[in-house]
Image 1 (cartoon, rainbow, N blue to C red):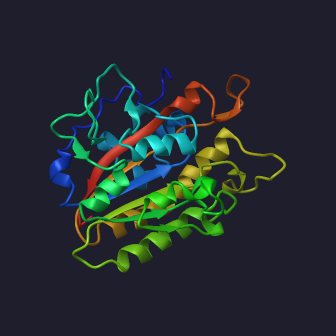
Image 2: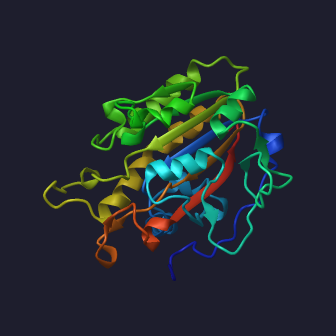
Length: 284
């Protein structure tokens, strides 16, 4: 996307995940359907200060999503395939399942011997907890139980879902309860799927109506809403020890771009996503 702020920013220095795993708590926050162009514009304009101050260099890294919709993308991420830097590779991964011939497994990659990262971290002594958001995490049917079923503990309530105007603050409150209830010596891998960006999001813009529907502007307003509450999540996750945080989108979405609406389709707005990883220090 030429001209989008932050689009040319180089990737961050990769930490040695063999040192991180077992020492730090881990947070994976997926901002479901968040578009790269919207995320970059808001960061550059100072409209998401709580997120921007955590981003390396104050800007999102431009990456390519591993899938075009929530289920496919999260299955890939839980297998160690996080969004890929939007530049020629190969790009060593943070996490990888052990398998012969992998060209993106490097010395700093944490390699697990289980089918997925979640069970791999559980084998390493982590308490694995999911706070779900969109329907693929609602546990209301066989399909909605697949992704939460990877975790030792999973949470979903209607208040966390896409139709709730207060979804993210409700999710953060549940995450705070999870952290508070965990023994101090137990490492935590917390996954939060933020549903606020997903359609419907018209209600995050004052004065908007259901009839007017969702737009790129209401999508941006939803990200501002998330930003107002994300500081509480970061504070909770760094309250016990240092936390390694990954914040990214699983895929983007379209609002009439080239005639397309929604996702699960091959469009630049869907495949290009914002990504960042950083440490949350206990004193932060």
